[in-house]
Amino acid sequence: MLFFLACTEPPAAEAAAHVQPYAQGTTLHDATGRELRLHGINARVEGLFDVSFDDGRAPLETIPPFGEADCAFIAEALGMNLLRLPLNWSAMEPVDDAFDDAYFERVATVVDACWAQGLYTQLDIHQDAYSKEIGEDGAPLWAIVPEPEALLEGPLDDLDSRRTSAQVLAAFRSLYAGDSGLHAAYGDMAGELASRFADRPGVVGLELHNEPVPLGDQAALDTFHEAVATAVRERAPSMAIHFEPDSFRNLTDSAPVTTPFPLGNVVYAPHVYTDVFEDGWASMDTAAIEASVAAAREEATAHDAPLLVGEFGHDPESETGRAYIAAALDAFDEHGASWAFWVYEEWSQGRWGLYGGEAEARGPLRDEVADLLARPFPAAIDGTVVAATWDGTTLTIEIDGAGDGEHLVSAPDRAWPGEVTARCDGAEVASAREGGRLSLRCEGRQLELSGE
Image (tube, rainbow, N blue to C red; front, top):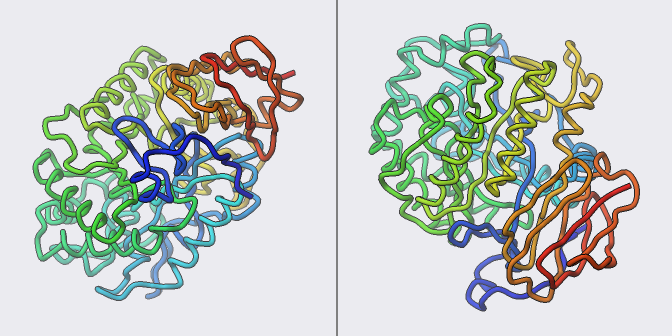
């Protein structure tokens, strides 16, 4: 089921070039040209997040299943329109120059299931501690340079020490330096992934590399990004490319831009974890979160790219964690940022997901967190979104240059379980609600929606 309505067409060249969302300067647009904002969630999916071995070693962790019902819940109950889907090089290309067709088919199944509910998918080439062979996930064994001295297995009780181990740090240095042809190999993998999904509806873009670790060598990261992005663009000319700064930004809350990203149609996708990993945000300083998001907006502007915060989150079981999530959401609204919450569900590590429980099975929904994330927002607006504010009951959207006025607004069941009243410049207008979204026409400057 496709929820996006026809609206003012983009310029002819753009309309011909894009069947998927695209970035135009600092704004993101759907395929018809409307300004697009994304609210969503990360999901590590069984069969896609590669943390097991075929040589008898114990799996690193157990990854939950994910399917059509989950896509529907995210779209309808939470009113979201984005799934950030972590994928691994080790699963795509376990043997050099031999891609796993079955893996790409499993990815396509998730993409299609979510797009049937109006959810875009961001294809995230994910890594944590470089590779499952020496860390948690990411590169295949053949792409670890130098060859590792020891292969590891589960469980991940020692993940912190893995992240800073000599063999993990050496592998990162080699990757960004392009040793042993790694730039070309990584670019070939990323280009293969992009080419297989280049014309598939529902794909919002390809993220080049999760949480880069260039060990202070920004020039090396810039060279790596340009090489990989160029390879992707050759195979999928119109696909939006998403990229992250040095993961050290998770600790410093800024990543000053000295060299803007060299390609167009790109999205800046940093993570925001202000003080989470240091002391669990003991200060509860909301100004620090706001400053991090404001800096991220400046960085995106310097790259001439839209801002999509690819990860943020905190312990959903704690009052501090929930306050953090609420403060981050307010900051994202203030700066017009798209975002994806970490994480939908997990049975290992921090258990930060929407579902509780200690066993490797889905526990009860964490209602307080679900209610925070079920936040109405302007999903696709025919015009320029000047501001959007949510006060817990009413969503107010300021629009500049509305065309013929057809818009799509998130309408989560959890936020608005009853009827929704829509007003355009104060006058009530008709709307149609389906699947966690509300479509309506407004040629005015202010759109106001409120529920019972």
